[in-house]
Amino acid sequence: MSVTPDTLYDAVQAEIAKYPTRRGAMLPALHLTQEAYGWLSPEALTACSDAIGFSPAYCQAVASFYDMFFLEPVGTHVIDVCTNLACALRGAGDVLEAFEGELGVRVGGTTDDGTITLRKAECLGGCSWAPVVAVDERYRERVSPGDVAQIVGETRSAPAVRHA
Amino acid sequence: MPEWTPRLEANVLLDFEGELRDLAAYEAYGGYAQLKRARAGMDPDTLIAELGGSALRGRGGAGFPTGRKASFLAPGAERYLVVNADESEPGSCKDRELMLRTPHALLEGILIVMNVLRLTRAYVYIRGEYLTESEVLEAAIAEARAAGYVGAPGPDGYVPEITVHRGAGAYICGEETALLASLNGFRGQPSAKPPFPAVSGAFERPTLLNNVETIATIPAILRRGPEDYKALGTEQSGGTHVMSISGHILRPGNYEMPMSRTMRHLIEDLAGGVPGGRALKAVIPGGASSPILGPEALDILCAPEALAAAGSMAGSAGVMVIDDTTCIVQLALRTAAFYTHESCGKCTPCREGTRWITDTLQRIEEGIAAPAEIDLVLEICDNVEGKCLCPLGDACAMPVRSMIKRFREEFDQHVELGYCPLHETSSLSSLYPQPRSLLPLATVSPS
Image (cartoon, rainbow over all chains, first blue to last red):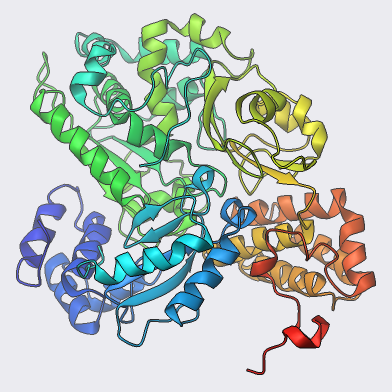
């Protein structure tokens, strides 16, 4: 099911078929491209452009609007800590600090070994289960600073994820 | 998966324990019976009349009567249904629970609307972060396809198709014109109306756009009958709604309750009140964009018209409870910083105003602002509110203004004292460290 650079073109054509306009498949194409390449590098954007039929510049212009598309390299895992109101009221700031301490990086940074990128997220829609942390887009709920070491350990030993 | 809150009273939409994720379980519960009624030949006027009779109002935030919205859909050979599953308002997490627990209720609602109105295709625009939720929806669609509800001709040859369309992380795409721009493959920036989506929406065709909960409620309304459903609510807002409750509350979760109940019922009876023997300081009743209320909120009905009369709004029903340890300046700052981050940059009052509101609130929180800067924030709010292309600017200005008006003395204290008086206790403090010069020397690390 997971897409590779070799299968990207066909995967994008399958998405285009679901929309009355080619442009409608722009977001699905960008998701697939990121999944195939790990991030939206110039090479990846060129491949996306070939598949969808809009220029690489247009693909990048759309991608840069959204938080989930990476226009710079990221680690093989991404941890998003929600710090919006509901999570902040229940101690998300302390959770974020614990991640910074455990990983030895500041928000936005990637560990030296290139495995984990730590990001601060806006509301992830898990307010009643706050604080929420998304590890490679899978939610961990009611996270406390005491859970952080275990989450980081599990993430380090999990197989590398390409971000879709 | 999260632990779901138990059913505490007679529900309409979540009238079961746990999950009804499989098609077989949903059908055993009575699911898809209303779709069969619709497929047997229900005309648009009947559906619109039933929705009108139920007094169902849109659950995405604006609260527009659903029947009337459906009646506005312009004629055309190609018309679309778009379901707004871009749930992004801080405090609101009900659509996520609905999609995870009862995805087929959403699909049945979609298919009823499509069959009756003869729509070309339905797109569920789901926020990109909801990866698990989109997988659950895709699995449910595959089941519905195998059962012949999707992708196969009905008795009269009509073939409905549903596509799950993942967003990619942008709060503004919950606003309808921005959502449609994003679905159409552009940057997700809003545009001025008209044209309204009912005339020119998805792919520049007439489009009906509804929230997840709104659509998922339709089968239940048809099953119970519109009068029965309406009777659970108020005259203007029929039925029940799913309220998300979070913050300083004993049992946070999503609770379905009749529109005719008070905030006290939700906060105290269902969710167990403020924990730790602490006092209730404030309530944000309808997501981060709604003006803040004090403890008097407890006696207000949760229906949209009642919260509007109290100077706030029901919004997307995301209730955040705030106890007396919390610094309201930090709360205002966190709120404003969110909208600053999410401002799309298209119109000037929002792009510039939200940033200046945040920067000035940051100075107040740090205790370095001049006294006049509190009124400056209010003045910037005036220059944002009602002057933007879409509601995002208002969503920043309204809560910030309400926090300053209601808790003015706290803002004044920050300026007079030169530091945050609640920094020791407030749960937001770790996000907003005080300037190093104010800390006792022993705690300042040499770095």
